[in-house]
Length: 145
Image 1 (cartoon, rainbow, N blue to C red):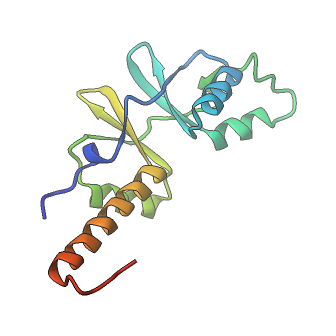
Image 2 (cartoon, rainbow, N blue to C red):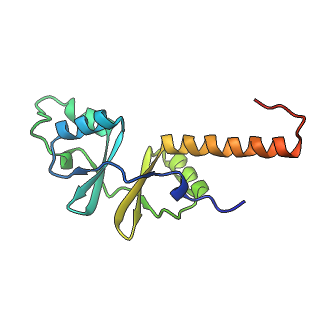
Image 3 (cartoon, helix red, strand yellow):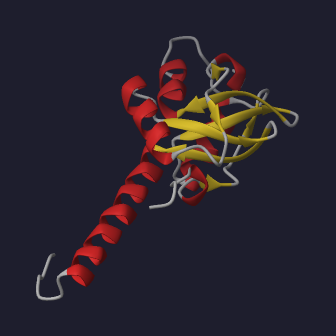
């Protein structure tokens, strides 16, 4: 089997948020697009990642006004970045071991995608489907659901 890469399973062109945007803006963006992770940019440069958990934690603090607090105050700095040609097996192992919910996919320092646990589940679904089809071809009398 050919090397399976992130390119085939990542979410391409993810929504991003500016480092100076408010937490309210980030929350609205996440809700509107039903996503849990936002790469954070300063201009074109990736500077962090904001998760729904980070957002909830900081927004839930007393005396925090999400309309006035910038994304920079809640984001995780220096997120893990991978190439679109990174091995699916390698990054799935890495994410599971470190309990990461997402990694940024970058090509020459430009954000081109994001790979999340939801993308990993889609990859698993695809790979299980391929295995099932191979079994049917190898043994046409077997009916697997």
